[in-house]
Image (cartoon, rainbow, N blue to C red):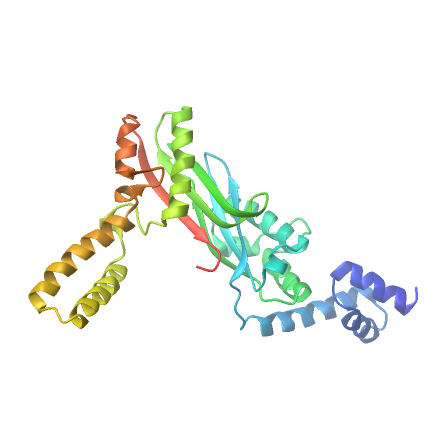
Amino acid sequence: MSDIEKVKQLREATGAGFKDCNLAVKESGGDLDKAVEILRVKGISKASKKMSRDAKDGVIATSGDENKISVIEVNCETDFVAKNNDFVSFAKELCELNNENNSDLEKLNKCKMLNDQTVEDNLVTLIAKMGEKITIGKVKTFNQPGTKNFNYLHTVVTDNLSKLSVIVSLETVENSDLVKSFGKQLSMHIAASNPLALSSDLIEKDVLQKELVLVTEELKNSGKPDEIVQKISLGKMNKFKEENALLTQAWVMEPKKKVQDIVKDLNISDLKINGFYRLKIGE
């Protein structure tokens, strides 16, 4: 086999560029196995240089069913790469492995993929091939006995890959169409309304403190006396908590009612919103 044929074969096997493959073939003395190793080492070097760049695009991959469901964020730098077949294939296989491993990133990185290489090794190879920073971001799995899981994908890239994904866990023994319809509608509501927590008492204290500082400063700058500022701040904070807690948000499909009213109207005695997770690329 001539060097040119070896370079061609190496390119097909690794996806690397002609120049890199040509140098690797010469450096390895024509040994293709050694050439692959050389490219891999160079790929790691290239990947490490790219990791300082921002990766705010990508996809959210969703996998699972009513019994167990997971989401995983796979980031890259551009929408062009997010739609690339190699990136899409990696994200699809990765999300299934993530669901199997209950969103344990340490285990996930060590898992072997279909090509018998680990997730972290495949990630390095993909970075070298795509020429962009690619990272695995946030993950979440719902897998609690006695619950049913639902999801909604917004801005779908392809199949189970999207720019925004919501997963919802409902606790109930009932398995009616009414429950399934509510689970889907609730997922859509969360996608649109972006609640911070299930109830107001679960909103993070740091978030509330930051909002209080902003509200107080805004009122003080308007020249109002401290007594009035304190009174108005209390009202604004109560409204902030109401609008950002899922149960007290206005129901998107019927804004005159709150989410908790809709749950009550369903008249399912054991129905409870067990949890939700909203994941959007770039947030």
